[in-house]
Amino acid sequence: MNKKTILIMALGCLVIFCVLCIVTAGLAVYFYNNNVTVTQTPTPTIKPSIKPTIDIDLPSPSLMPSPQVTLKTYTNTELGITLKYPSSWSVEEYVDGTADTCLTTSVYISNGEYSFEYYKPCASGIAVCLYEDSVGYDYPEYIQFNSYVPIRNAQKDARRSYEIENNVWYVCMKDATTGNYLSNIAGGDIYYYAPESPDPIKLDQMDKILLSLEVME
Image 1 (cartoon, rainbow, N blue to C red):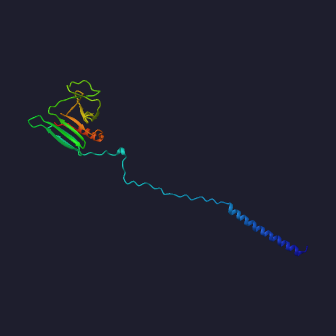
Image 2 (cartoon, helix red, strand yellow; image 1 turned 60 degrees about the vertical axis):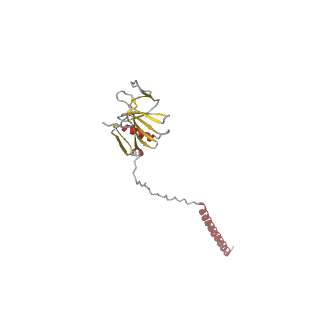
Image 3 (spheres, helix red, strand yellow; image 1 turned 90 degrees about the vertical axis):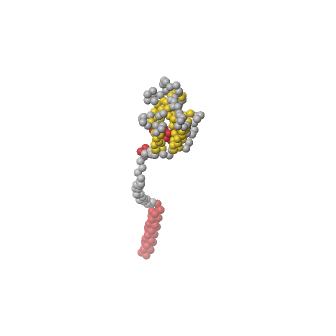
């Protein structure tokens, strides 16, 4: 083998080696790009802290004041009574009789279908109101009631009982001396007039009228 042949074979091997290196490098780059996943940590989004804006500082329901009711005062010097009633109610007086006869007077404090009556009969009589817890009594007249609703404050103790037939509440006041409940209150009888299914707020207002009733000195 001469020198020229050896040189040609060496150059061929070098060319083949270079081609193999280029192919190997290309395959390496290909597989690298297609198999390596680059994981990027996402940048967290920071939201600003927003504080609520309070325009009005309202108290809790338990601390809120109850609605105020404007009251008026009714005074009747002839009957010798005074009482307070809501300004949204009206007062009417009725007198049956003449100056020469015994007068029967009624005072109505009304609001629509609801009415508080103070009735001063011509001949004043007192009846005892009997309940399940009543004790002995010495009055000739009495009224029997099966149930009642108590009406009380620091000075007065009363009860109202409902009569279905007349759709009226009869009111009796406790006598401090005898302990009995009497129909005659401050010289007259008290009645509540209301619908069959009464509004408890209206009944409560009539109770407050009753508790404000005073005998004038």
